[in-house]
Image 1 (tube, rainbow, N blue to C red):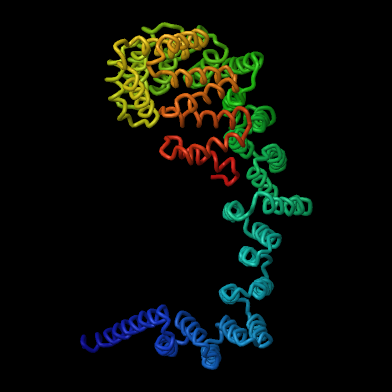
Image 2: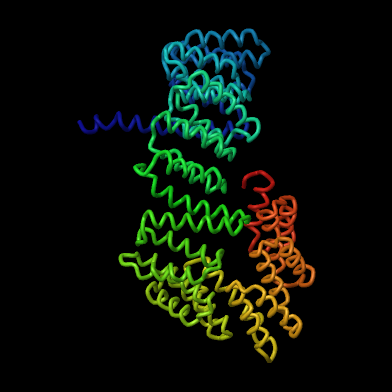
Length: 601
């Protein structure tokens, strides 16, 4: 009995294996251009199972290659008779007539297929796909339009219609269809936005989308999906002012909790649109009020946005800085000075130290922070490193070294510990103890932090390159002292010292390094033309030096970021790409060049 039971299974396995082998051989014949041989095998496979779409399509394509239209017509008619529900096969019949130049007969087949459509979603999609595959987009559109009526669901096939109009090259209808889809399926918003971001051009595509959205909002103001999409369009165009206007209107209409405005503020600040971001945070603070879940974070981020606007905008007055200082004090008076506001206090200390030049106040603020109870270890370590910097800026080297050493010990094998170790190594460099600095830097080259590792390598290479070039270490010691004076914001003293090196130790080879430091001082003083002129001397006077690409890259950044001269910036980024292919700045230069060129890479 077991043997009789097993026999059908064996026969089935042998049959399936035989079919697979024939299909594989037929596929090989077809790819090799041996269509006659392929036709014999595909005909056999198709006639064994007339409902199998794959064998039908392969046999049909083979007959087209052979231009055997008579046999093709015969097989299509038979296949329709054996599987009348597969009305997409009428499209194959139409294709045969088209190949023979019989357009009227082809249209008859296409129209017959559409006429036979029933209220069956799978059948509708299969027929439309058959038309799309044949590039008969008009018939595919007709199929979906009739299908929607048959299914009695408006916009049921709007998404599919959008795809067809895209292939047809009809931009307005494509956008219209995808917006219709949103009305039918709002949960497809993210999917459609991703498509628009990929397919629509900045000028024509997004402008057309915006035009249609305005029309829909005016016609159906109650449908919120359209203003949401419009906000997205404004964000794509980096028009945060209009994005905020629409967002506020939607927030008020839907009685939201400020989440939409808060997210927009974050995006605006990330894209350096500070005015819009500041307005958004102010809206949450003033309109949504203290009970809003985003109130405190908005106050906190508002301070950061105002600071970044001043610092990164490079245009500020003493009054602007004092106003920002007042904002910090106001925040701390409202929320207190505790571990939860320690970050704000640390930010205020930076404002005092680097911009208001009040080191005593900066140190006083951080002295309070580092003694706070329940302050997280990382926050305390960060505050101690900053405090160490401020003591060093005030000339108290011992206090500075002590704080760095504490962090080194407390955060051993952590990035902050490495940072503290690097700071101490640089202290040794400032004091002229180059051997000890070099020993520490050698260890830090293997830091898990790429920034610390790169800084350690740069300083180590600099010391190796310039130390002991002659019998006297004096030029390097003077340069390190000048470097410290620059860190302490004693710019004039630093420049005087560097100029003395240039006049008394010309042969030492520190010329390009001195020009680089002087250009950085000019940059800090917002003397951009002076900084550019100093950098220009490096490729001219030291064309074989290792700082040439560095100087070119810095010039490009100043032109781009500080002076707004994008053409000059592009020329310099391009110079790095072509003249300095081995530069460490090559990837960043390429990225910035492409962005300025407008391709967004």
